[in-house]
Structures are given as structure tokens and as C-alpha cells.
Length: 111
Image (cartoon, rainbow, N blue to C red; front, side, top):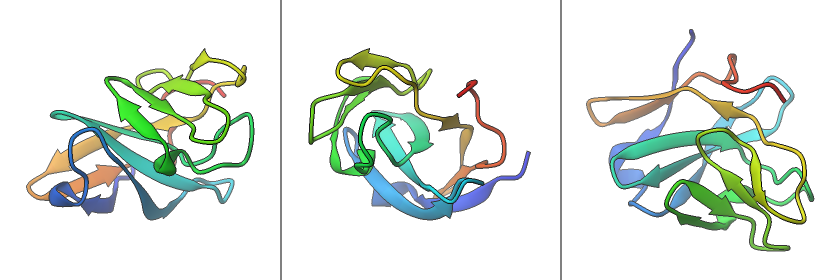
């Protein structure tokens, strides 16, 4: 695995998302999301419309796209609410000290 620094721990409050400077191999940015002490990383683009998921609401283990209300499970990338029907890529995350690291080269799901 090839982890890169995405942001600092203090950059993302619980229940929030942050667009990062990291891009997936396809060139789409990555968002880091936080639910309490749990960290997630997803491709920062709704699979229904090209809208940044980092601008959506995080509640529990889901993120909701602000435009049409599609929801995605942050653990699997699968849609949990229409109109999205396709999953979004999710990526491994680890916290080391004050840094949040993401491996954008190895998605955790088949998309």
C-alpha cells in the first residue's frame, strides 16, 4: 500500500467532510470524512452527478450529496438512497499522529 498525507486530524471535525489535494488514478479528487473517531476516504464525486461529496452532509456512516440527495455508505461505497444506483470508490485510511493518510492506489471496493 502507498499511503499519502491527505490532511491533518484537526482539519476534519466529526460529522464533516474535506476535499483533499489527493487524486485517484482516474484524476478525480478524494474526500476525507469523519464520523466520531472513524475515518473514511471516498472519491469526491457522486456517481449520479459530478457533484463533490465533500460538500454533502455526513451522518453516521453515510454521506448525502447536496444536489439530489443520493446517499452512500462510507464503509462500502454503495448507494443507500436514490437517485444514485452505482457505488463510489472508497480507499484505505489510517491516522498516524496528527496526519490522516490515504492510499488512493488501492480501492477497497469493486467499482
